[in-house]
Length: 409
Image (cartoon, rainbow, N blue to C red):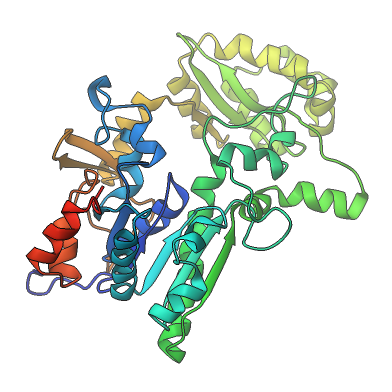
């Protein structure tokens, strides 16, 4: 119940069915849930979400309800466990659709249709429904039914071909990049669909290709090919527009600082910070184009200085001189960062099985309707009875009968 004068959240009253898996769809619903939407997460214990059975686990103790990665995009959600291989499980899923205004999934083309939960099916259940489907490569085209992961799409998008060093193999990322990129586009598309429905009372299908969202982030390379018919190359940490540009080893164990110099003024400030050694006056380094030609030698000379200083000191000195620089942080550094903690970026919620557990907050702040943490990530099927009897209108008897049939598993 709201306190007197408390402001309504942006998505308060919006009802969402989250049929997601892993990150992409659950993260879309996470944004909605932290801004007031009521989200039912539809899951199964016979085939649990991959991130429920993936490390890291709290206290290194495995369990369906102890996975840290699952907790991240599932704050403020209710979980119902459904066996969609049973007719009665599908019927409960359709009741959830009837209750919902928005349905989100990120399966390949096929499973939702098999269960009678494709968009054409949903329109018959609820004509004004909005369905967002974020698949690997879109709902149409020759590859529309391909299963896969974000790691695969990093390669397909061309990002891997631009990542790494010129004399080495392409690099992927240590995470499924498209899974955390696509949700941003998904939320924007959903907001547009909600505006359209408010004006027309009509729903629609949102076809969100994760591959196509990734390509947005290599636009310069794509334009270089379109205009010049040339492929961009892997250039490691360097940049065509800045020298020095990279991460430099500092004093200590595996300590680094990122430095980027793109203007003459920044170069002068950089030289002053490192004490204006004689080599900075060499013609090889005075102009950006010359520094670019002699970049490897320049980087070696810079590291002779940075290795004598702590990374935080390098950053502070460079920033004071107007030179862009930043410490390369690890997980501990980020979690203890005073800036992030002052802004309440990490939400510590009391999980029913893991206990106090830090969840990621939202990276943006709405001054009038800020995101809120109400519930920790749910245990599998934690709210099955509540959803059925309190939200879908089932009687206790009906719920117990369905439970006996193995519907909620």
